[in-house]
Image (cartoon, rainbow over the protein chains, first blue to last red):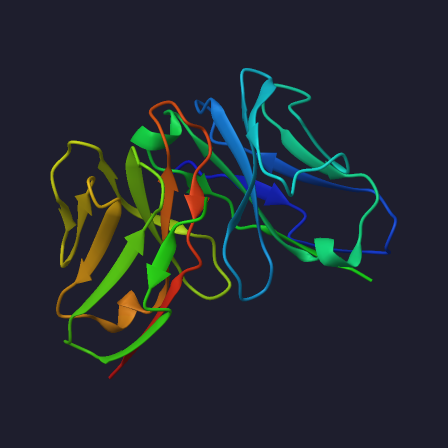
Length: 115
Length: 111
């Protein structure tokens, strides 16, 4: 069964360092998302991406964040200068349908720990 | 605008029923329900569209009251496997690409 894959599963970094989280969405999907979840809290929307551009973003997704689809398979989230409060689980998701009509398929997540 | 879920937590014995509610202050086009087990990714349960019918999957069903901007998830004769945190996700209009989740309802099923 096709699945969304994310790497790394866990990354530890020093405050101020740049981090890139990688995702391989399901191959025929066109809509991509990043969510984050601080331990024990809700799943928060960060950004959606379609047709090589950002569709929507939340207030969390400030200038420190960027997304890119560098090739036909990868979808990346970059945090330029990490802060302690960026520590969270980051989930990538994809779907083949506009959000309201279909299921979001989530990856297993990348846990980011900022020291 | 984040939807609001209630209750925040529920503890049941196996075989009991539960209802989880989700409400929004804004007009909704659709409501999604996901379940997340500890340490895992959210998994899709069902989606309810504006003007659509009540959905069901095995002993889990849901309703969507568009006028009240509310949805309810019904878990009947709960099983141990139903334990987890349930999130509703909402959007405001057709074509929206921003699904916003509520704060979650933690469901614990005891034998």
